[in-house]
Length: 390
Image 1: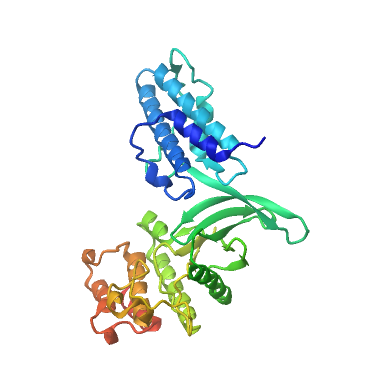
Image 2: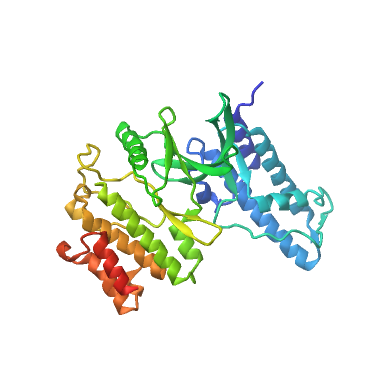
């Protein structure tokens, strides 16, 4: 008889009688919007694993003896994790734990005892406790039609990103031996929002540039599409490489210029340039290729989906759009956002007040001139100013 999964999750949560504040709960917000109890369970296990293993590390440094009470607690949470991981496989709640935590748990089971405490081995695996990022990831599965046979292939998919309108999953296709992503519309979107989501795919499928994320197929039933996988966001890459060579920074900027020039030549305005929807694919020879994604706000000629409201969308857009209206977005607002991206790539800065170099300050300030006719009118003009500045 199949297990009632929702009831199983509720029973596990109730058995814990957990009364502490769950500080890790925000890390799992949106993981499973249909079941908040499941999100809380993941957050509790995360919090308790961190607490108990941090205490174990402190005891290893003192007398190498783990107290009986904490030993029983840790065993209880390990069993909870293992039972949930087993029973939820193949369901929409299937999940995985960080590989380093998994190794530590496997080692712990070799010495943890129910009574009299536990001797801590001297070779206890030392891992970094993750306080500010999830240790659990969702791993749904999906059936992919095989290119050479009539039989579909089934793969585990892992949630790697989520926003107001869509979830992004990653999976590895064994036939091609490479990763792909699936971008799936959130449940509850309006018909107009679903039309815009599909239009994003249609626009990207028409763009043939090495600097635009390639898309492959749209699934009308699931409201999702398949696309190539990129290694990381521009925000993460620049933030994690503060000493990145200037030549590599310039290479990224020049790719962005070529990317936007191409898109504009097709009559489109992206309208949502940000540090997280500009992606990078890294290669073994040290080169990195820009991949622009998220065309959900794209402005195109004669589109009936362009809203007439004045709400600002896009994290780097000019606040003046509140006055002129987002539907009146024009090239000078695209170059405004692109200038902010370029500043971040070249300096790592997002705040204009922290700019010390006068040439860089002039380069950035031109984008916000009150007279829009004095701003950068197109990408070529912005590129020329870039070459004079950096």
